[in-house]
Length: 376
Image (cartoon, rainbow, N blue to C red):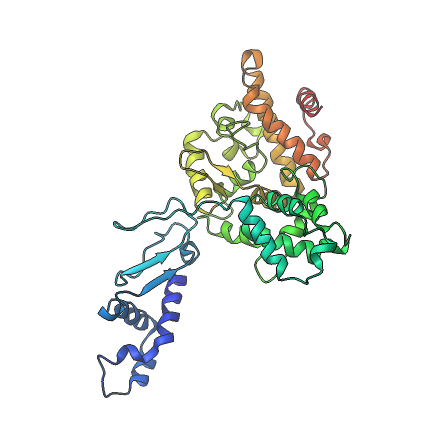
């Protein structure tokens, strides 16, 4: 609420004592305005929005989520006097007033991301596009795909290629960048280079900064929703491979003392779904359509893994792989393998992407045998 109030106060200060003309003609308007409290100035601005001459005015509140504390009604405090209000939000679950219209913006297509890359490239020195291969449409297409359709990441990527990646090789900066972030970000072991890109700042916030700001909008930034986000970054969440929710639905955990994170890993559907909703509301996960399952944005998954650090990742992966093992042997004929083996394989790939030996997981012999069989 404070940020929204500050926005209203900023609007009010731009018009100033002119709000008082109708009520205080012939008096010292400047002195009266100066003596008004901030709350009085905000209320005068809201009243002014309702004046007849302002009926066609458009009040725009961009990114309303950032103006509220977590858990607050996102449109509480929005002026009721204004006749026309346009507000933007990344929360697909927002509840609007009766009569409000919702316009859903679709994800940007790859061709749109290529256009963003070309626009950013055009703002740099004219000769950069040739020696970095950035005039090659195939390279631009690969760069667009490597940032998974994320427009901010595309802007940063082009600047990173030109200003940083080119220091290694003036001729193949674009291709080198794609190699660093290619596939699912799990095909290379240069995690430090990936972190450098995620933390890279130009005139805009870095990708990592954006994640941290969104994380602060969780009701408890270090609470269960974030812990679930850490777990999801280590699970296979591609719905074409496996429904990750089945990991929680069918997991077999007998000795809870083996699992320091049992409070999250031991959740069933009833406990997982409210946390998924919180994660969705700060846009860490998204669905292309309401009928489609949630999916984690790969860049956010990588940011989450980088924030965790190796020790935290090793602890969680060891618990995840152990749960997968016990959950598959608990059912005859290994019928549960399809629900759990993809997660083991995903953890193996993550180990490779962070230059971690699978043996660092230090698991029981039987579990090690499963891991090595799936790794080959």
